[in-house]
Image 1 (tube, rainbow, N blue to C red):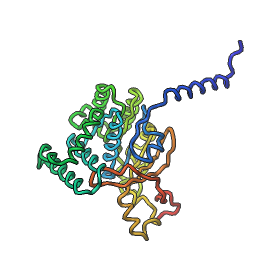
Image 2: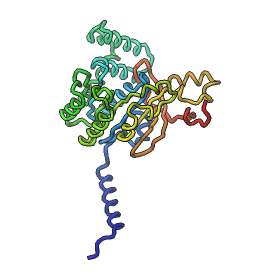
Image 3: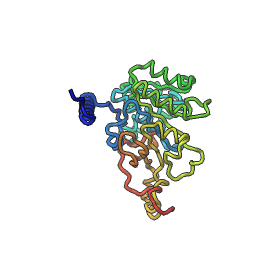
Image 4: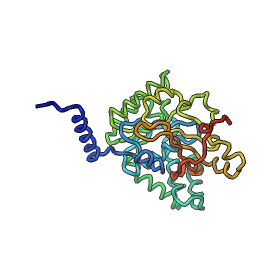
Length: 320
């Protein structure tokens, strides 16, 4: 019998591959951010290393906590490893997010926010602030609903470096997502962040999970109007290992001055917005810029965003 020609074998392989995808499509973990999930064709995928970069204070932790919350709400088991905030601080942020999901700026939300601040400052016990505060009680009830799907690890439980993360994932066999805030803290004694980045990617592939990691920027890039992937510390290994690289920027400095120099009202609206740019996407669209409104009072951003319509500084041919 004549052996199949290469093209015939190729058709067979393609047919089988498509059939497998139709019958068992790769699951995706939605972030809850629109239109980010549409651009990512549903969200993050297993075996992906996703890196989120940006300058200090731009909102990386806020975004990671919001994404973790949304995935846990959908029944996805998430491990949130945070090296800089206590468990109480993270719970406080989640309470504020839940309050922000209610009617914004009503007298009830202001009172509930104040109660959370009193608790976090150590001036009142939880039992004192929650009593007779219906909105705060409802916020806590919502957290209790998704809490079984969200495990929080803070600095004390992460002293073992990379092995501590491996142990946490192996101890929770249902975990689909590991969130690391941030990757340069995983093993600060190592001179090369590249090793940590490689190991995080290896962990994602070996255990079939999604790893989301915040990344620092290079000190020399702190004054850049718009930060790009090349501005990240250990940018080369991030670019090589990561499947998806997202960058957060304040919108006002990142927009061409042609849009804001002569329109103070427009400039004021930019101040309250952040840009989320897809710098690298191994499986789809990249070079996509999205915008979201900040909600400072509730430590969140409004997940209902839009595509950026203005020119950004590095889209302008003539240096401004």
